[in-house]
Structures are given as structure tokens and as C-alpha cells.
Length: 234
Ligand SMILES: *Cc1c(COP(=O)(O)O)cnc(C)c1O
Image (cartoon, rainbow, N blue to C red; front, top):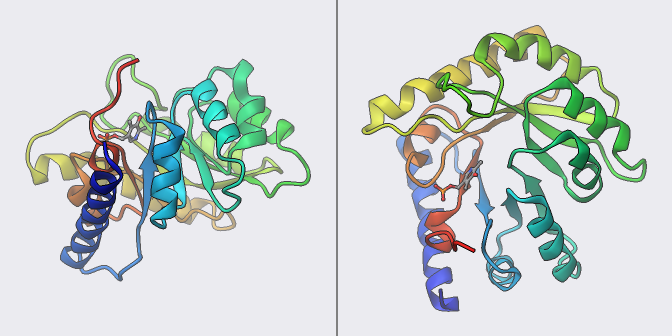
């Protein structure tokens, strides 16, 4: 992808988000754009950064750490880890990311809290929910969210910010909206049961369901393909 193409696709993605917020009758800037840069080179991240993008999402730990090392000079960049994580890899996430979207068990959360360096603010975390109840997919089942959230909310070095989901692919706005509405309702229930937790984030909406997600209250949309083009297969 050329620099010009990236500039055009980033502009287009921002316009899509702006229009989706207008259609949903929500305030502008009520949701922000997380640029999902997995498989894309550090140079593209740098280019997106030069165009004003600050929040980036990565799925593969070693790839992310390599790119972070190349981009250390971008001191206001905000790194989000959004992929599956083995419990023996938590330390690198605790040390090198501002956000972790894919917490799906207490063991991972406890390790992240223990390993978060003291000089950093609490690690922002979202619980990943298997909202479409798919076999062998990541995330906790909807019924298990409340007890996990309560336990995570008590961990000292984490800030429980909200919920994340990757719904099963669906055709059409209404079919896309149904699971996203369920995620919103789960967050609303947590906001009531855990009033002291900083629960302000619905991490949902990707290239194919951004509009549905914004209609259902997404606050952080995770766009990969729409910004960087089709994934590189390595
Ligand atoms: C890859 C990925 C995305 C981006 O998906 P697109 O369809 O390319 O926008 C968003 N969220 C997660 C968790 C991902 O793994």
C-alpha cells in the first residue's frame, strides 16, 4: 500500500465512523478508532501516526514487541493488545501495552496485575466475551462475565474498562446488531453491579460491522482491513 493509499483509507475510515455516529444520533468523538495493524510493517504504523492516528491494536505478541522497538520514538502512541494470550506471556503485555482487550480468565488478569510495573498507570483491560456462544472461540460465556468482572475489579494494578467481542459473521444490519446489543446490555449490567469500576468501554465493531456496532454503543472500534488493506500473510 502506498503512503497516499493509506492516507485515503484512513480518511475514509474516519468518515465512516463520523457518519455512523451521526446516524446513531451520538455526539461526535463519542467513539474512537483503534487501528489494527497486525501483519503490517512498522513503517505503515509510523505513516498512520504521522496522519494523527494514535491508538494501535496488535494480535501477535512477538510481532508487536518488534514493531514497538522500531517505533520507540513515537512517545504518545497507545498500544492495545487484542489477541489471544497464553498465561506465560502476560509479563510482556503488562510491561509494554496500555490496554489489554482479550482477558478471558482470572489467572491472566491476576498475572497482569502482579506484573504491571509500578511506574506505569494501571493496565486498562476489557473482558472478551464469546457473545455468539461459538464452540472453541475465545472469550468468556455471557453468563460468566459478572463473576469474572467482580474479581478483576478488585485487582490493584488493573482498570476494568469494559467488554470486547468478535461476534460470529452475520449478513445485514439487524443480524449484526443483535449480539452487539447483548454486549451493550452486559456492560450496562456491570455498570450497575460495580459502580466504582471505570466501565466506559465497548470494544466492538470491525471493518464489516462498524455501523452496527456504533448503533449499539461501541466506544472503541477496531478497524484493520479498512485502514491498512487486506492482511499480509507471512
Ligand atoms: C484483526 C482484528 C480486527 C480487525 O479486523 P478487520 O475486519 O480487518 O477490521 C479487530 N479485532 C480483532 C480482535 C482482530 O483480531
